[in-house]
Image (cartoon, rainbow, N blue to C red; front, side):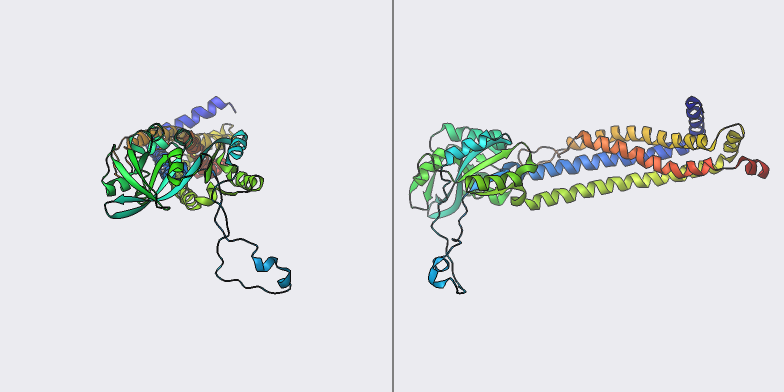
Length: 419
C-alpha cells in the first residue's frame, strides 16, 4: 500500500481524537523531560563528588609501602627448616620510603604512550606551632606546575595563587581549616617543626580547600624543594610518583605492570577509591531506573489510548479492510500513530529537559565547604539525550504494537454484520 496514504490515514485518526493524542504526547514529553533532567542533575552531582577526591587522586601511585619482611631470620635458618615457626610481634624491616632511582623511573613512566603525565610528591609529617600548642599536620611537597596540569590544583586554591608556592622561597599553601585554627592570613609566617625536631618558618601564600573539612584541617602544600629542605633530604628524594593515564580503565593493569617492572608498590585508583565508584554507580543506576520507569508508565498510557481508539474506530477499520487494506496495512497505520506520538512527544521532552537542566544550572548553590561551586552541578552529556530519544521511540512502539496487531485482525464482515 502507498506509504503516503498510510501516513495520511494515521494523521486523520490522530487529529480526529486530538485531545487523547495530546494527552499521550504530554505523557511522553513529561517522562522524557524528567528523564533528561534527572540524569543531567544526578550525573552532574556525581562529577562534583568524584571531583573532590578522584580528580585529586592519581590513576596509579608508585611508592614504597612500609611492611614486615616476609622472610624472617628463623624461616631462612637451615636449623629450623623442618619446624613450624610461630613468630609474634613482627616489626617492619629496614625499608626506605624513598623511591630508589626515581629519576629514571619518572622518565620511563612519562615515555609510556598510555601515560598522560607523572608528578613527583613528597609527604612530610610536621607540627604547626601555635604558641605553646603543637598542631599535627601534613605538608605535601609537589611540583606545582604538574599538579596544576594533571590534577587541577589551582581550582582548589581559594586564595592566593598556586604558583606562588614555587616562586616564593620557603612558602606554604595552608588548608583552609588549618589556617582558621592558626589564624594565619596570607603573608603571615607560620612556624613548623619536623619530626626530627628541626624548626622552620614558612610564609603563607594561599589557602587550599578540598571540600572535605577534616582534610583541610590537616593538609597543606609546598613546593617539593621546600619540603626536601624541611626534611633535610637531597633534591632527588621523593616518596611518591603520581601517574595520570589517558584511559582511567587501564589503571589496574598499568599498576600491576609498573609494580613488576620498577620493583615498587603500585596502587590503582579503582582500588584506592572503590567506595566512590560504588556510590556513583548506585546513583546513576537509580537515575536510569526512575527515568525508564517514567517512560514505561507513559507507554501504558499510549497503550490504553490506542486500545480505546481501536474500539471507537472499528467502523473505520472495517471500511479500510473492506476497500482493500490488508491487515498489515492497518497494523502500519496504528504503529505510525504510536511512533508519531513518541517522536513528537519525545522531541518536545528533550527540549523541555534541556530547559529544566539550564534552570537548575542557574540556581545559586553556595556552601562554605565548596567555595568554587556557585550553582547546582549539571551534566549536559549528549548521551542522555540520545538514550532519551531512543527510549521514547522504543516505548511507544511497544505500546502501539499490541493494539495495532489487534486492529489488523479485525474481521470487517463481523463488524458490518453487527451494524
